[in-house]
Length: 454
Image (cartoon, rainbow, N blue to C red; front, top):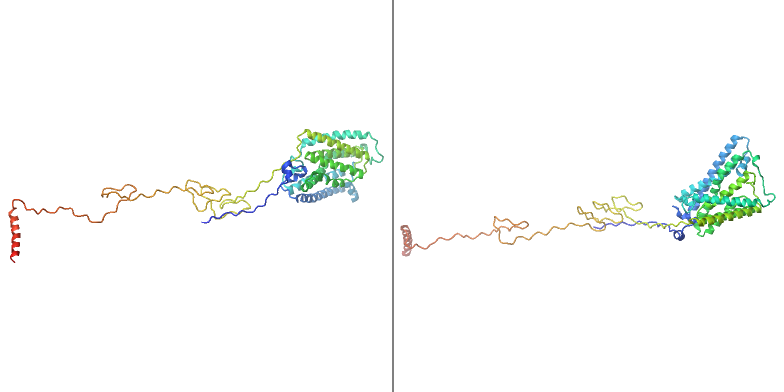
């Protein structure tokens, strides 16, 4: 009987990982390879879903803001609403909150879009540790505060340029001073972190999915970050230096914590000074002194972070293991098949033991009772009974003798036995015999004589 053999199902091999992520380890801009889905198309799909979600959420926020304003002041016009949504005014805490909130929602929207497209392990958006390293984040925030205070104190010693103050509002002239200060303290950290997750998280890992060298991931997102800030050329240069430093810190430390700390402290200082009437957060022109102090402050912060990083563990990469090759295991009829592989029909399992996947049972050979078969080998067979003993060939047995066990009795002999009865003795006795004998003998003799006369 022909034993049907399972036909291997062709499987799609898993995409190979690049050599740099399995050897020295994946830097931050290459962490997309650590996700569940890491195809070349995933950054594009994540961006498309994120843009659609952001448009929907920002529209809802704007509509809610417009309804709230119309309820409080029905005479307001559409131009006033638009101006409040686009202009940073520290005397309008509601409008300031809407502006900061519309930027802060980019953080959860990006996390959701990345989860939908790339699957699990969303924490690799934050760092190589698979999470946001809070201890390192707070340490970087402390370093940024110290550096910013020192550089700001030194910059106040320099003479201010004319026309660089802008529209300043002192706390005494601001009736919403406390509300605006609370809005800044509560929402600016989320707004700064959201920008870092988008420009240093999403964009750097998007470029790093296609280009291996970190310089591309650091420099290519810089123009987009600069275009997102409306300043003159001096202010744009300051923003560009900030973007390059934040990208380098993200790559160097293996996470967004240092860049987030720098961004939070910088924005808190900018909005805080504006609330306290020391600067104008809505100003678009920047002085050379502000550019120089900003560059010095960024450079000092980078140096302090590098020093702190070298004193720590210095982990900045994540070594990935290549996916194992799939092993084909053909199922056996009567047991649940492996998904994606059709079962082999016509091969029932051997009674008494479930088959091992990948080894078809021996078809057509029943098992031996009490001995489970070994797959791949014919089952053990009980020893055959000994051959029957030869028929009995000794001397003939008498009827009262029985044959021994296992021996055959001889067939009965049908040949008639010879007559062993002795013949009568014809010798005459010595005394001549009795009268009767003589008469008889005479009769006999006379008979013989009679016969002779004839």
